[in-house]
Length: 276
Image 1: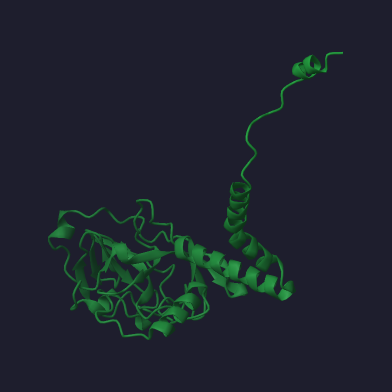
Image 2: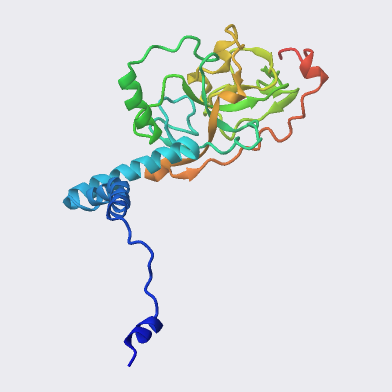
């Protein structure tokens, strides 16, 4: 038997070069090095016992709460009685930060939270940076009082409105229309014991507390820059719910007190009704 011919007919082996050992090891080592931080993080998160997992879960929850309070809904601790009886000291209202985010603007009767810098507060007091961070974190979840420049008030006048007080019946007027505030005004309070007559500039708001005898609001800043009005872009959000205490949990209904107020007209822009 011709063995040489037999061997010649056998399939030929693959003559491709063998992989270089150094290259294979190098790529494997690079892969291991690339995944090692992720692997280490996973091992740290899943190891260490229940205490470490509890701390990690708490941290994740805190990050989630801070994100929600920064962009969606923020608890706001009511520090004073200026909005009684609608809001009481110690109430936590939930501020809807999306209410005016997509083109909508505050309307008459809305209860808003706003930054009073340059309107209600001309020179914010200095604050220790560490204290400021702690206060901001605590106030963002409703555990601490908010910054001294944050206020909660009710919108009474919007841009172009003429707001006067008071007429012969002792009522507040907006664009010449008397406003019946019985639904939210603190019992025994007059709409204002200080007469005023103001035309609200565009993109500004005239705001007042529901407890008029215990509220420092737009009336108290008439002689200051801005004339007591608040820029719309300083509004943090609309207070839509009371979230705490448990017995006070409810939504804040819209008031119908301003339903009959006409749009600002020529009379509102150029003076108008005298004080009654």
